[in-house]
Length: 191
Image (cartoon, rainbow, N blue to C red):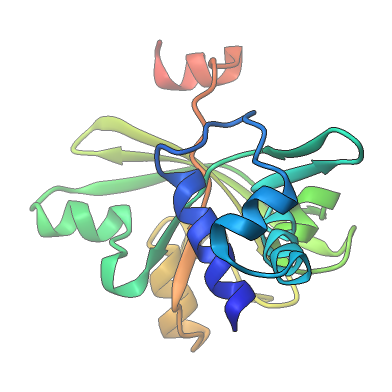
């Protein structure tokens, strides 16, 4: 579909160097002319980006870049466990929180579930060869993965999903955000 191609091109521009977070995108008319499509087709493309949380439309003010994203397809995706293993390093996952909570508006949108639907919230510290490597937060649908345990999350979550749940992963959607550390994060990471 043409609108999906336009959405992909816009994503590439947002994730590349064309636009920064907070930038105002060109008007619908300008984008329609740039991509040589109707405004209706362009709006469908923008709808995709809005649903993914990459842009925000403000009536009367325009469309702004809300965030960039990183999308990894399976052929390019290496989870931290695989990277460590292939480098001959030992990886340990320390589970800091493992709880069921109601999905917030943002999480429900990202997981394509209803708001307040039960989700697992997992916060884990990834340690490679006794060095802190990553503080990770994960939300997974309880309905989709009802048997998930702390034990699974101490290992590779991708391995659990594919091998035990028989769910083929065709890609992953991750958001990396530079942030100032909260006191909790600073304490955990010893910074």
